[in-house]
Image 1 (cartoon, helix red, strand yellow):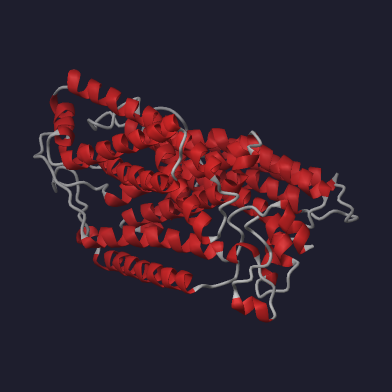
Image 2 (cartoon, one colour; image 1 turned 90 degrees about the horizontal axis):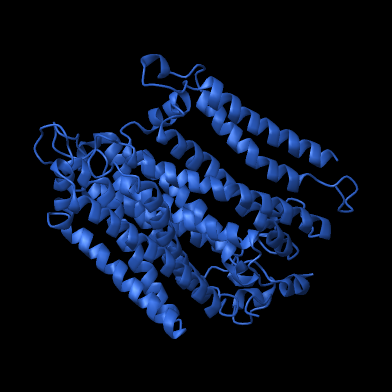
Length: 74
Length: 442
């Protein structure tokens, strides 16, 4: 249960970071106006990258988290 | 079974240490010579790169378009595109093997994943070499990148997401074999235990691994199509650059990526087959499968080339026609026709083997090398001629000739990739260990 919870947490945090940073924090979509050039939050693209990394890291969490009783059951 | 736990021809292990499969930890003279040569070339590449950093890009053949009559994107960008292309086939094959449970091709999975990781690292170094201020490039990408730019897709999806996903895929797949080898008391036991990270190969762990890699494969496949397409869009969406602006750029990028990657995978598989004595696992069936896949992709790519040529020669005018002329009959013609001949001859070789159902591994390796040389030529033609001959502004036709610095950096990158694979082969089995080895080891 703990494995699934942590995996889901990692996955959802990653996906959330991607969506929020990509659509709300980086430079707005639209025309090439100067106002659309800069990100709304500096280093927002880094948050997107971190989101992508967290999303895929959830697979590592899922596999590497040790079993509580070592019997192999999650 | 070629990956036996005991290999009687190795003298060092006969004394006291157990022998690991596939020559893991056993440094042969041939391997040492190869590594020494690769290190020397990497050293030369590093010197060339440092020289460029010290003197500026004036020591390269790269110049501004128009005012300086050159091309700011040259050999580095051509090889960036080539390396990213090679990565495509690796992870595609690995993902297909997991998704469709292609058991006979499982021996290819890890080397395909490794090829992807190595080529993506080389791609990111290649783009850094292209930047006058690499550090500034890294910082500003994370600071200011715009999501509607294809560069954002390329570098966020390819370099971060795709590379990280491939690393995760490679690592999780390697844990089982590391755990098997960690049971032996060798100099690498600590490393293998670290990589295994507590893995004991219980049924529950196997199930978990199957589930995790299935979902990873499912997530990676669409992402890599998007990633490679955005790299094509970097060129294909530039309306002011005749020769680049084309709807075919993205799909053609994906298909040529498959051609070069499968070709290199054939070469790597043949090397592993010979060096690690994996003749039983990497058998003719595996190479025939790769050969058929390569034939289909080569046909598709030649179709794209023909379509592009028909369009640009039939109705194109002005600068679009200038670029086509430069490629077909001008100073880039030798690269275009050389690449085309290599593709056609390779396809003829593949079809001959396909029709006769007799696959020759030596011929396939030659074809693998040929399509990669052709792919490098095509990548150069995608990048350079549109900058030197495709200007809409009234500038003179430009020129671009790479200098020794660029050749040095690119050679260094290739050697670095070969070195990384050679070192990996001595640490972790590059071919997944079969069940029998596990039984022997336990």
